[in-house]
Image (cartoon, rainbow, N blue to C red; front, side, top):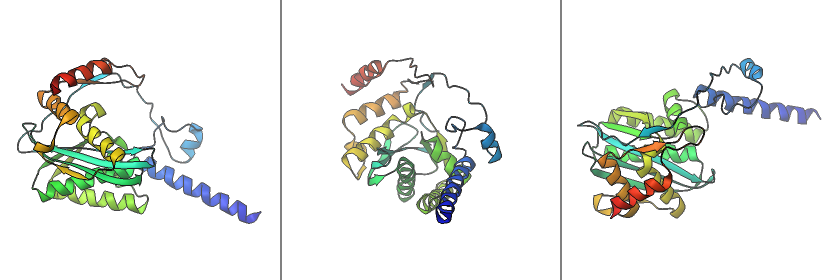
Length: 247
């Protein structure tokens, strides 16, 4: 009986440790917290009221010379499930210098996102593509990088490697809406579902990806949906524009 109580206490302490890690990384918000707010305050968690996000117009923006821009994404089909990482580096004219897909086997979305940033930044360093703007749509991962939050060893190890690469590349990591990260999102999902590991150059870009990049280069806007799920443009409208870019 005493052993069971000690076991339960250790589980509770471990859960509390993980919650504090998430809170320190600013990834635990009132949206995720479903328990008693008084209990949250006892644990030192102070939540701000979340303001619902309205639909907004977004587009991919080319970096100012001499900067390059890396759009990166990770995908896990099941979380954990088949996972893949991907990224694409373009210059101030929107021209592709390098794209990358990496199969991860089975993994979580956080590890997939971190791997995507790490692998592509290593490639950027190898090819001298710096200084670098890094864009990703995973706010959780950006918070982890900004806070240097501790956690599982593989997460902490990857965070430290990325921080080191940031210094070497003079890299600025920024958040974008998923709609402005479509090219990397497409590559990451393909890498996860087909378990692809490829380095792509300009001549290797075909099909849907070519259409997405063409729309990005032309500055065609898309619309990020609000928290209520409302979209300013139906998906069929965007698909019709993408089809026109491909033909």
